[in-house]
Image (cartoon, rainbow over all chains, first blue to last red; front, side):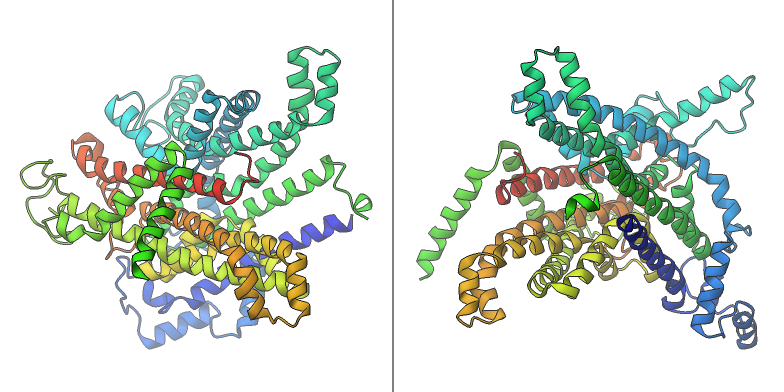
Length: 329
Length: 289
């Protein structure tokens, strides 16, 4: 139990660093936020008189001590108040909630798909270790795992959408279309999501493949596998009941550890396909210099990733009986 | 003296070459060609890379072997000079993060105790942070100059060499010959120079090559999102400009404006991945094949 608490404290510290970073950045950046307000194209415009700026400084509480500002900031965060967007003139929280489902859909579908691909190809490779086909698959998956998602996406986009015209170029739904039934609507959404999901899945399957291959590879050399083989168990039972089950454990938890990379990939993929999720919104925010919006999205993504990592970490400890404090001693 | 060094270097290079796999060799050749392209950029391209040199958006041919972009800038010149940006980013990040991370790893392992715990906690935090979103935010706030991008990349890259070097140092520290040398009065810097560094150097070199590769790939991702240095156009930024040209797929412009930088970037990234894997296995036989 103390080990669990220690872990939570550790991730809590990471969270605190992110919050502090988010708080400090606008105050550290070159220039003054009020100078940047109207300079949309990057040029610094003095849009306010000295009195106006003084007024805004008081209004936003920037004349108070930093510690007080920080406490106020944390209070707002804990109430879920992420401020309001300069550009869209709306609460950041509302904007994020509107876009979040698309990103969630994309990430979940792609994770499932890449996990499945990793499992199938990875176990195939683990059983045929050292053969020529396996070596080729290994190299291909390793290279695929290091190619950034946006490159994979652009290649697919050029070949399948721009070249062959099989898939839509961008967006998540047909604009201004009226659907006769919910089914047609769903079909349209899936049709638009196909390439983004495929891209993200392809870009992530390399690391899942390596995980499955290595974890199965370790399991196969264990004594209990030899025992099982000596008992004359069928190949099927040997592979799925004995090997796969034991290899799955690290896989489940490592999936949680991968969330950070998957989110990063989703940001890129959404921008390739103009998919209206958080990643696209984040780039829009960068483009129009909407700092509160940028920070709000960053906060949501960071918290999600940290929570996922913590859960994976705790789950690993719970599932693997070998990692318990009383055995360590 | 000098006549000895050159054959020796050739023999070393030959040894290295024979240790690479087939894919590693191909990757190395491609990487060397791209480095040559970067070095001789002014010689191989005859148009300016940062100014218009003809009509906008002309297809390849007629002096512009890869066509021009929306401002009439020659694409081949931009690609040749863009290779320089990748190399600067890769080298800069590898040096900064590789040396910084190695120093931290060495100090953490040698001192142990509180120093070690602080460094390792920092490493854990860096691993838990979602790197791309943090980099986007940092680049957006501090402005995407080449220097800032290198700093941001290094900030996220140092934890890998730090961890590797630290664990290797912990093993070395327990070796009896090193303990002996310490008992005979060898100070930290003596031990470092005579015993630690010769053992650590291959590891540091390999992780620096890996860092350079990852930095180049990440810079491409950031540039693709529009967060590249606008005065030093990398391939990622050319792609960003092409993709943001509205309706590019409804015209034929993408067939050169997007396709050529994309091909070069894919070649570079794939070669870095293949070469990186190869040397990683050479340096650490414990990694299974």
